[in-house]
Each structure stands twice: as C-alpha cells, then as structure tokens.
Length: 135
Image (cartoon, rainbow, N blue to C red; front, side, top):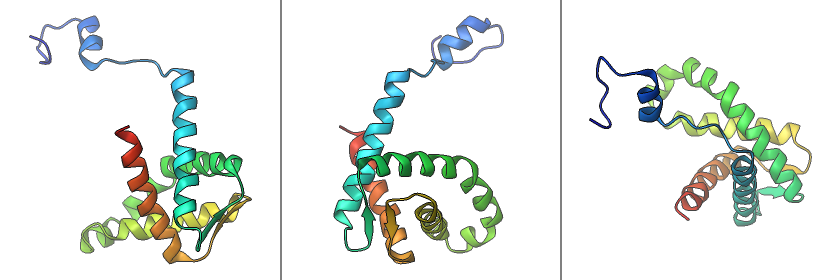
C-alpha cells in the first residue's frame, strides 16, 4: 500500500513514504537567483515607489526577506492573531508591508517610498513568484 501509513511499517519505508531529500547546493543557488530576479522585476514594475540599486541589492533583499520571514514574521502573526482574525486575514498585508519597510531601512540600495508602496510591493512580488513557480 503506497501512500498510506500502517502500524507495522519499517523506518526505511517511512523515509520513502515522506521522500526526505537533502537540499542540493545548486538548487539553492538557483532559487536565490530566481527569487532575486523576481524582486528586481517587481521593482521595475513599481519604479515610482520602489527603487533598487542593482541585482546584488536584490540578492541581499531576498536573503534579508528570507531571514525576516523565517524568524520575525511568525512571531508577529501570533501577536496579531486576534486582529488578523477580525480583519479576515487582511492584516497580513500590513505585517508584510511593515517587514518590507524594515528591510528597506537595513539594506543599502533598496528604497521604499512609503507604506502603501511596501504593501503593493509584497502583493506584486507574490504574484511574480507565483508566476515563476509555474515556469
């Protein structure tokens, strides 16, 4: 029975069932480059309110965004859970915009005009990443 967990399964069968794979260094590098290109492309679409110096700054923004989304965003989501439930999840846009503003203060070469542009950047970046996922 493939795909079903039974009581007497061996650990090796469980590993095959879950399909645990070690991350490949080349795929990690490709992921960084594709997401950095998505950030660079998003800033091109929103050039009135978002400015980025070069592709190197886009790589730094991606790495900073990854760190912030890994460590800070879950804490903010838990702290503002009642407000997020009250607004039916729309407060997540405010959290994302605030994190983009935070990153723009720490990454040289990345400028965000105001909070509205930060929220718009996070929405457009999500759409661009969604599009790249299907290529």
